[in-house]
Image (cartoon, rainbow, N blue to C red; front, side, top):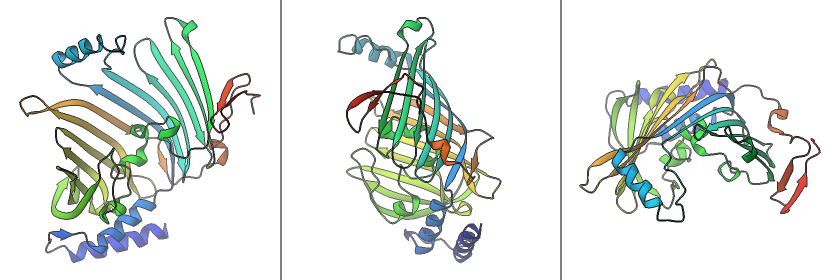
Length: 320
């Protein structure tokens, strides 16, 4: 709590200094210091999360893509139109735990669990087919990689990712450190404006994308510069993220919902909406809460074959 109060004093002091005039230009030290506090204040969390992704492309374009698949090695694949996931999610520093259920189609469901105890991942995945249980499968693995994405946990389901700028802490982004997004990096970050967005007074920052794009980020001043809107535009691709924040019981602002839109340009150079998604933290979600280490130690059911990525061998679980 003392750390949070100190961070607020830094933010309030800076807000008073810029109350009468806003000057375009490079990012001030005061903003970076406040953002750095905001990056580090939330150390743990747990609760339930819902995720909903939808392909909103036109029927004509979907049909054209589906027809193109018929003449490819993916001829039996179907264009995905919608995906829903329900999760229990917990983190404590680098430690992570998730229990996830995804409805891929009306017939196909996957249920997966993963636990990272700070040293190794334990992961188990169940693929179930409601119409034909004989096709059901179970896969389990152990691996050392600390990156959740490498362990089969998508960043789209991780609320910590949405409180960064595409995976990079806000303060590092403001310092001009490279932000990895595929093969793209951002540079020349400057503060260019002030706007009221998603219920917050924000400072707007803009940077360039090599070779021809831009990144614009809206950071809420009263929330230690948490991102409430991010727009990435590069050639024929545009991604817009809108974050809704809420104040949790311990007085910290953190994510409530993130809405993501992917847009592409058509043959006439006009933008059209391709996909939309929402990640929502349920009301039971808590931050900076006490979590027992046992939450992150996942055991396999006895008799399950487990692939140990570290050794390249399969073992049979004894249930420990």
